[in-house]
Amino acid sequence: MSTSITKLFKVKYPLIQAGMIWCSGWELASAVSNAGGLGIIGSGSMYPEVLDDHIQKCKAHTSLPFAVNLPMLYPNIEEHIHTIIKNKVPIVFTSAGNPKTYTEMLKSRGITVVHVVSSVKFAIKAEQAGVDAIVAEGFEAGGHNGRDETTTLCLIPMVRKAVSIPVIAAGGIADGRSMFACIALGADGVQIGSRFVTSEESSAHINFKNAVLQCNEGDTKLTLKELTPVRLIKNDFYHQVQNAYENNATKDELKELLGRGRAKKGMFNGDLKEGELEIGQISGLLDEILPAGEIVRQIIKEFGETQKSIQQISL
View 1: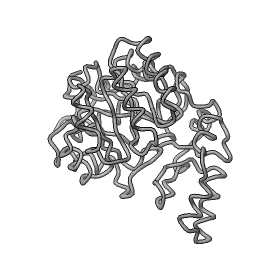
View 2 (view 1 turned 90 degrees about the vertical axis):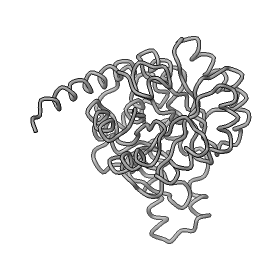
View 3 (view 1 turned 180 degrees about the vertical axis):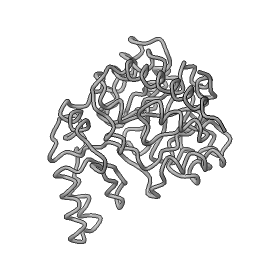
C-alpha cells in the first residue's frame, strides 16, 4: 500500500497510532511500528526524563520509524524538544498551539513535522507554517477537540480541497471500512486513537480499557468548551460538569472543578467515577482487547476486503 504518507514516513501502511496521553508509551508505539504502521509516543503526560526513557526503549524495540506527539501547551516543551533532538526522533506531531513556533527549527534538524488541526482555517495556517503534513481531526475523536464540531466526513474533503500537503484523517476511525472511507474522501492516511487504547500494549488502566469496551452509542460527549473542548465518557465527573453548567458556573469555577490530574486519575489510575475518561465516539464499536500488531493486521485486512467489495459494485 503506497500513498504520500507511506513515502513521507517510510512505513508500510498509511496507518498512524495517535499519541494519546496516559495510553501511548514505548510499548504501544514500537508494536504499531513493528506491524507496519507509525507508532507515536504521547509526551503530553510525561516529564522530560520519562519521555527520554520511553524514546530510548522504543528505539531498542523497533528499528522502524516512530514519532513523538508534542502538545504545544505543555509547560516543559523546550525540554521535550531537546530530548527529541538529542535522541534523533525522525517525526514529530505537534498539536494544541501555533505550528509556526517550532516547525522551522524542528525541520532544520531533519525532523518531519505534522500538525493536528480541526478546521480548514487551521489546516491552511499549518501549511503556511511549513509543516510536512496535517492531521485533520473530526469532532468524533476522543480527548481534546475542536470547537466547531465538524465531523470527519465533512472535514476531510474540505481540508483536501484547501491544502496541497498530505492529509491524515482522524476521528471515528477504528476499522478497515472507516479507513477506506477516509481514503475515498481524499485522505492520504489515517490516525487511529480509541482502538489502540484497548490494545494490550496501551498503558491505560485495565479499568479504563474495560469502561471503553462497555461504551455504547451516545455514551461520550464533547464538553468543557470554555476551557479546552474534550470528549469524555459520561461518568460521575462528567455529570458534575453538567450540574455546574446548569448552575451557570463561571469559567473559573469550571477550572476549579476540573482541578489537576483528572485524566491521569481516570485513564492511568483507573478511577472511573472521579477521573476524566477521554475516548472517541467510535468506542461504541469496540468489544475486545487485542495486541496492537493484531489490530493493525485486522484493519489492513478489512481495508483490502472493503476495496474488493466496492470494486464489485456496477454503475
